[in-house]
Length: 256
Image (tube, rainbow, N blue to C red; front, side):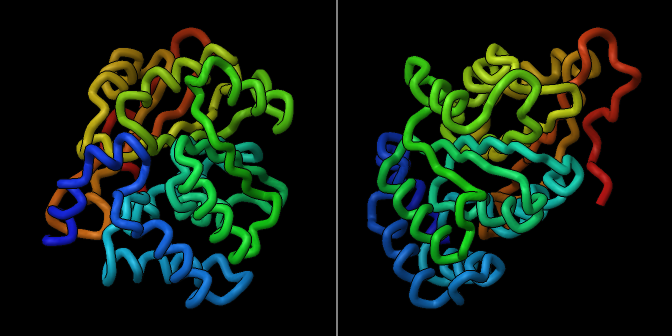
């Protein structure tokens, strides 16, 4: 509890810089390089989870909600994935572990320091060029979007999976930017973390208003990362074909 309260007190710094402000992200990179087996994604994940429980809480998706992410990627069987919010690279490790060998993940991170931490951890885990981090945002006047299209093969109907886990106020604007580019195809999946804490009400309202016509969303109930007393929610939304949808899965719990 004390670790969680300490982090909450640093939320202003976190919002401005993408880091908690006490050096825990850099310390995590050093810890992973020292204690995780080289070339072993599973061991890198294990070491990060252990660090978050025993040393300093991290704001990645965590082990409990990470299982939701794993299952969503397996269901989607994506070939091209986009992550909004790299942080220290934990969720990219999880996605790389379950996506197809030929699949590629591009992760966008506004903090250069976080991008550096993630690259070092990924290199140690042996991810190679399957995962790429771009320093920027989708809202940087088109610079990052241009890089995704010209350097990383993004184009109409080519994006299969999006994981949204960055600044809550950017969730809906960035989803709209993705839609404006036409990158999604019918059946593409968008998974969004932190629907209760800190919450993204405009994003959630947008999806509810379009349930069964543009999107089909299921809710995954869980807890805020690395603890069991504060509840959180992950939304898994499937992009539907144009026109009326043939039924809806509603917003109940997803099957295991």
